[in-house]
Image 1: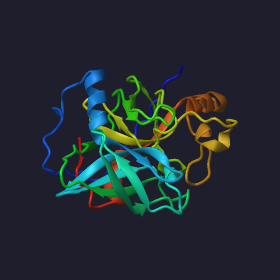
Image 2: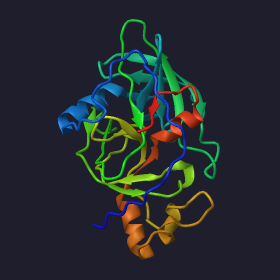
Image 3: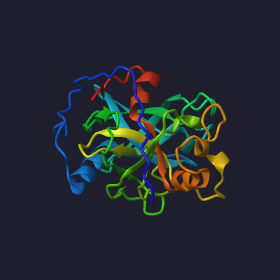
Image 4: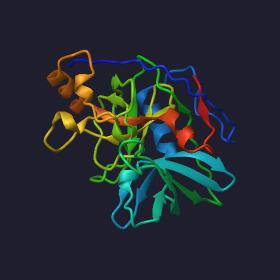
Length: 258
């Protein structure tokens, strides 16, 4: 299968912060799949509501308050409170803080929730920009098993020069499952490079499923025939890059410029 990586130059400023938790790994060491899955499990939560199911990533800790980022599409518009289940089996009441999916052309399929834990402490994710040639892994809570699941390491298939509708920009070949929307995409150092939101589509695949924000077709912008491009796009899962998060939510200052 054709693997195409389109590099993008970002000029956004990175931030770092000591959030009170020790780093899970050296920023320059590669980690095996089993260790990566353990890291993913520590920073990933299950999110449920009356009609909602998905995964989320712990991205900030402020005393006893934890901030979670997930995909907005897993949260029903008429719900504001959710159940957050952490990796140790504890359940907390989650409160919706912000949604960024105001529309497809300039919004992002992202939302922020918070919960409080007075007795238990949880690890916070390290957020970085994906670097070329890095393999990635996803870890979340599929709806069919309701148990934490990690994919195998896989290749990044596309890094688009601009984001598609709802902010999706980073494509990869990973066996993600329904219910994993909102889960982290980790690099080989255990750092979060994106928030997973799209798996392989279940509906009829056509060029208009993959549009840039200006309405133009992604399949016609790549340096391969449009039908081959559509095959590549539809075979990929998709994430919103981690470097978008501190721009949308300035309180989140643990993004590391690598």
